[in-house]
Length: 83
Image (cartoon, rainbow, N blue to C red; front, side, top):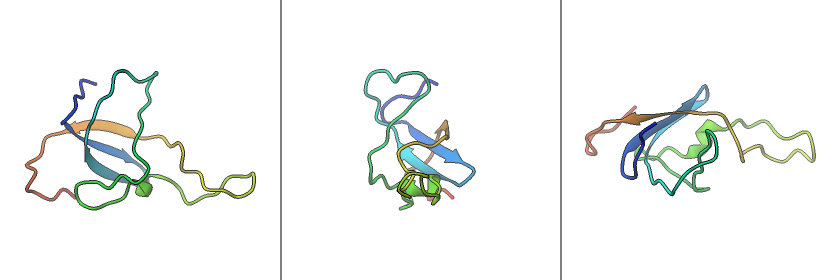
């Protein structure tokens, strides 16, 4: 994908999208990525917008440890809000 640390990236799916600054640590396995648990994007939107409120079948716990997303580089003026 050519994403480097410091690049702005859009992470999105059918539930929403967030804009964050990438921090690359070595290589990922396959097509995977990790995000800090309390990630907030540059517009103040929490990453939880990307996960369903549906609960697991076992013990009805939340399903927030994995979700499918699309990732793309984004070129932005840091002073502009992105919607």
